[in-house]
Length: 179
Image (cartoon, rainbow, N blue to C red):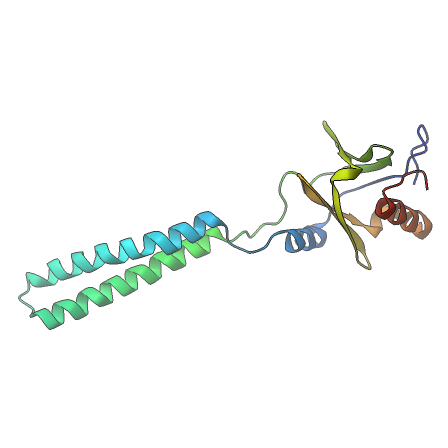
């Protein structure tokens, strides 16, 4: 497709659920974030130590000897640490793909300055010098930029026009809208 006013290649569409998963899988390095690692890995030993002290003091009042106190406090500490770790790991999974910049209708236009991304009220131009990589796959193109979120451009946005899709891909890779 071409913008009738400026003759620049233009494509418009919205990512579906499968494409959002593909985008997040290609751009995110893991399923947990750094905050989770901190809470699960750093605070779990503190929780464990606290439970060990609580267990030891509780059972000391029952008159248990030192061996049993050690065993009970170790069991309390181990279980508390495991439960704490599992709770934070479960809460922290990034279940739903799609951040604000990945959802909604997007219009992409190639021009001499770069790739213009129009998301309704927000229009940004990603200069050709910021383009890091164009990864081509059979059903989509993944475009990575320096200092901006990556873009996934599915072939289905071009409808049945395979020539327009191939031309858009070629111009994007060549960083040349006039080609």
